Structures are given as C-alpha cells and as structure tokens.
Image (cartoon, rainbow, N blue to C red; front, side, top):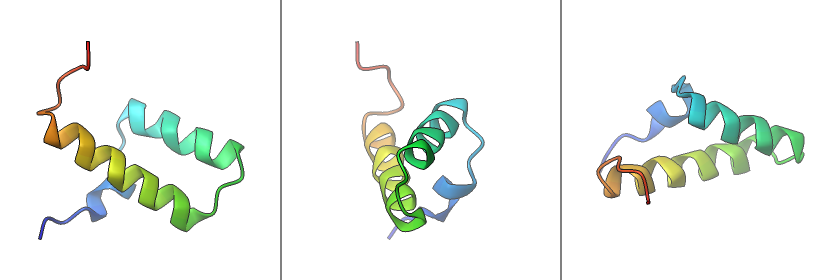
Length: 52
C-alpha cells in the first residue's frame, strides 16, 4: 500500500491552492486531508500529465 501521508506535507503550489480553498469553505481537517490524498492519487495515476 502506498504511503499517502506526504500529501498533507507537500508544498506544491497546486495543492496549497486546494488546501486554501478547503479552508475557505470551512471543510474539516479530515475532509481536507482526504480530498488532498485523492487528488494526489489521481494526479499520480495519470503520470502527472496536464489533462489537456
């Protein structure tokens, strides 16, 4: 099983924007963490390519 704990410590500008949006919307820390992990998994699955 991969270690996804690095998602919460990542200093990527993209993930920082997602994190800021979650906090602005008042999401709980657990929801923010879960969303970030899913996003990291999705991006890694697609070999970090831009969707366009």
